[in-house]
Length: 200
Image (cartoon, rainbow, N blue to C red; front, side, top):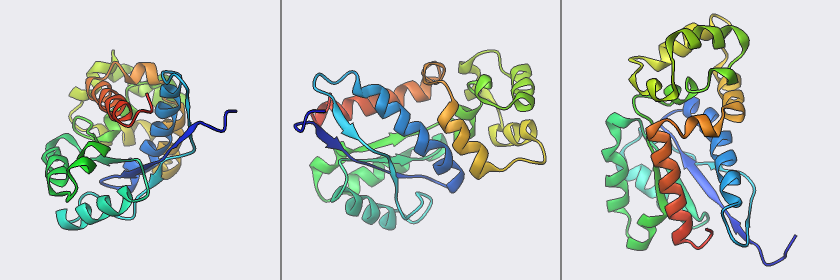
């Protein structure tokens, strides 16, 4: 391995812990998939969670993002779609204009759980069968009225989000997810940010 390879570091802020459990392994896998697009490649270890949640007051979130940007190349900020304006307000509040380009929003339509429904094959057998009856295509997950409830019902009473969601983040097909418009947009935004930083 070349000693000249650059090292990419990413931090993640989410609305809640359940989002974090799923998104941390998912972001890691998506970044690794993008390494092949880099002419020289780059090194990447793992996405690190921040200490605050994005549902906290904006000034605290802004302070957390600024602190993270001192140590990380990118900060991925998660909000559900109805709160998407908060990411723009956080960017606008950053003191360094150049820092705004290093903040990437990750915004599922409705809830992160919708993305967890996109690839039934990634689910255990029982939940897979239940979800396949509800969703015919990955694009349909953004129309599910209550993805959190749908996922909980599919898993049943033994549902352990901290385990189940982490496992889904490791298993869900990236190709399938890229057929979900909101996920496709996020990958495009991530790619653009990495191009600006000359990783791609």
